[in-house]
Length: 277
Image 1 (cartoon, rainbow, N blue to C red):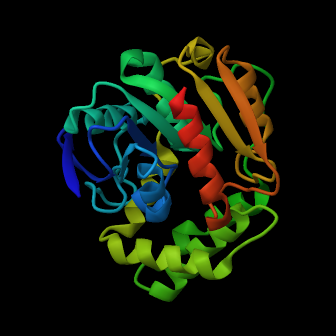
Image 2 (cartoon, rainbow, N blue to C red; image 1 turned 30 degrees about the vertical axis):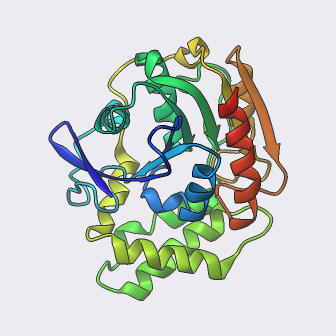
């Protein structure tokens, strides 16, 4: 574990493998800490001669958190946190793997600091600054569930676990590992001293005009999308890949907005191959 300073806050990080190997930095989605990247995935990828780094977004895990409703930052600040992680490890350029919001932040960094990004792998992500016809987004069942957040009793551990479990269930694809989801949620709860703060991510916006900017990305890009994603349906991934000249698109049948254990071995191979290029 290593603490990195970013704009007056602390970002908790963890590294796997040899620092002399090419760096792969993993950027999770909204509300998710570094535990969203399973340790087995990080360790196995590091065995492919990669220096793998994962980190807690602000307001998650062991990074600096502010009370729910008091998040006064935007997407650009979270992109700067990613650059701070690179700086904290003395990394000039890294392969960035981003999921959902993490993919959005990765696109920002690839544009504002292209020399720092060797390649992008974007999972379950949407285009930064999309300017075309509206793309399909989160299913109503998930929106209805999030609407109950204001009534959640955060002192009731069982109720909190059930609320988070339902998010995972509604985000899954055609199969759902209930036991695995509960184990991951309990690990997150045990490691998060300020658990409600993660929902500050629901209110972040952008201070700049990014309209159409994703089309200017020039690093090698691999877009991976679950064919059954209920949060960002696959048309988002297709639009992202089609709008970037150097992008490839990979659809995974049955996969939702998730990283279930059964996809991790193949994901290691996919990321290793893409970052070999």
